[in-house]
Length: 203
Image (cartoon, rainbow, N blue to C red; front, side):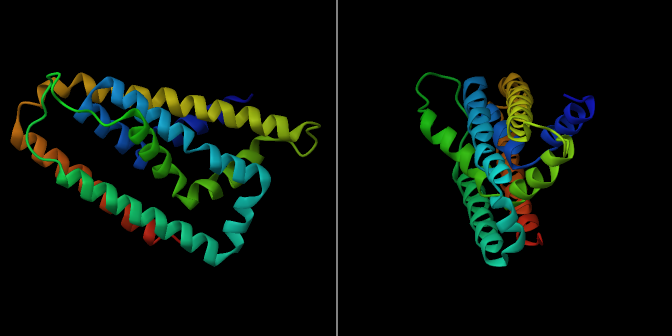
């Protein structure tokens, strides 16, 4: 496995996006455990795109305007939904045991949906993975699966790092209602901005 692949993957994974935003939000609002669960969900959400790239479905998204546009606007709708949910939360965060956390299933499902509903991920992997697999590679499928697994592992590690960092500063902001209000507005605005960016994305 090349250093170029690892460095490129690390840059892609560490770049702020919907997955990073979701993991940070989970860490700040509900602590380290929630951020790790969110990272698991975001990582699992990569699987369909990698499968699409490997099997060739990404080629369909790249050539079919209808398929691409449908998935794109589903993604936009979900990002706006995330923004609305973020704004609906109110009050200061409580570190006590009386706080009812979101279930593990809901946190993971949200993370999965955030990454699944992004057609550019399929296009990215379709263009990205083949660059690191030689045309003379006798086991190209196995090689792509290996590279995909490494990418997913890097995603999980980096996202957990983001989440734990967010959780570590949680105690400094949870008791400040105004800070929390602006944080929620910032996260909601970021989700809306990412949705707008996705809506304007062309194939």
